[in-house]
Image (cartoon, rainbow, N blue to C red; front, side, top):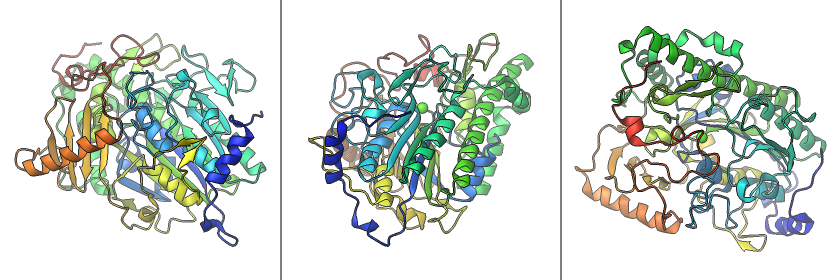
Length: 562
Ligand SMILES: [Ca+2]
């Protein structure tokens, strides 16, 4: 395969002049690290073994044992905005992706990365890195914003994800800008995305090594996003294991989280939401159906873990693991879409022709001990595991880091460790200053520069300043105030007791919203708490499944028996 980065050599030269490597890497300096960001899709806070889960994830647990686990790291609660913020170091509305990939008209909601931002790939390519991505893109390919146009010299990507198997209904892949037939000989026969992204990630790294360059790889798994699909023999291994039910499993996860130090003993386990039924109240047939759903979810996560293990082994075999900074995280909390029953549809659930959603009941387990889910700015929507692995640099493997961080910090961290310079202009356009802070001090357990962190999605909103968090449901929702040091699970609303804190933080949030293109709001949608705005192509598999309504998630509608 061969292709050149789009934009041409003049643009590249201009970028090099703007973003020359900093003085950190003068003669005699240690070699710059390779950087790998592995992003998973819709995985909950407690699904990994090293965050309390019972799904076997030995490879990620080993990565955590050799690296660091952050306990208070945040995404933006949804696929597209997290990707936009991660890739650019800006809040997602600043980069034009405040919602999904439909154009809602307002500047913060154009549905694709705009020209006021640069991607990590653009910055690192200009600093001499070999840049590559594999996996789910989802920041505006439908509008022509593509990896090969935004700094990635190599890419094998899915514009929006939502498939696993080569013969899935929505399956389509682009290799370095070329649309491939799903049975193209360049692809392994009968491919499954979780393996494909890793295979090509390793291929691209081999190209970087041949070019004798440090590499930046962004590997964005679509796992474990719906439709959940995995090989039948792998699903079979988990069948029956989940008949213990979500109530007992939540208690077990919570106990392990306390033991591991991920969760403080004083944070109460959030109660089971009213819409989620007590496991023991279900009939054996209902329990069997739910067991089947979670067996498929667990198989998808376990397969992803093995794929990460294979990737790490490949780096080790190539003798580049030691000086590779690897970050592993999820793009939003577990997904309650489809409501408490989830979905289990198709002649062979888990196959390419089936539709399986985890659903609210199991998503509550996935987010133990936190409240709410994907879409929401309560902790269950925005908290993610973050594993940081870098043997050469991390002196205290296995430790936890409690410094709060946000996906906007990843750009600043990459710029820092690569000795790159973040540009004031790119391709003749002024670029907004990055919002994040380098996480490098946290590697040595020093404080990261303290700043307030902000969120907005579909009217849901939050600000975290120190241990205070102000959060609301929908634009019209009242602000709730929590002291996260005492109450990470957001159960004791202090808004009435501390009105002066509410006023101060709400004013800060408003100023941020004005500054970052959260406002003006788009005309359509988001008037009701948590209700999805207009859905563009690829936003939902059917009329209701991809759309989250609070009444559907949190309401008391009894579930449909199998
Ligand atoms: Ca997602």
